[in-house]
Amino acid sequence: MNTSPNAYTVDAFCDAYGIRRNLAYDEIKAGRLSIRKAGRRTIIRKIDADAWLDNLPIGNKELAPAEEA
Image (cartoon, rainbow, N blue to C red; front, side, top):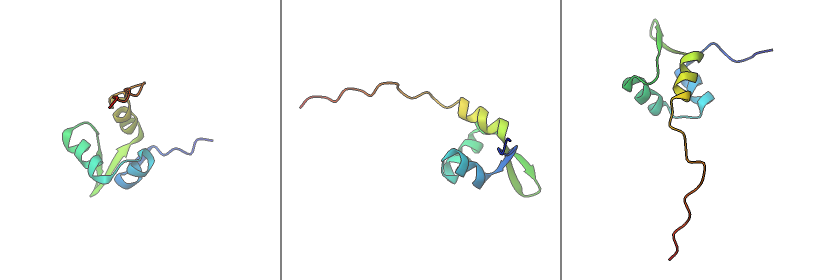
């Protein structure tokens, strides 16, 4: 059984993706995270949340070696 929602409020999106509200609103303002409006409520579709996640930069696979003193 799939319990994943089809859409999130901003707070639910932040909880699900482990980010702060100000980062979510920065991403919305920059156009990197698509939203929908239902009255005054801001809604982020799961498909848009996943697209945002897929477009984040890929981190380094290896840690840089520590410099010797």
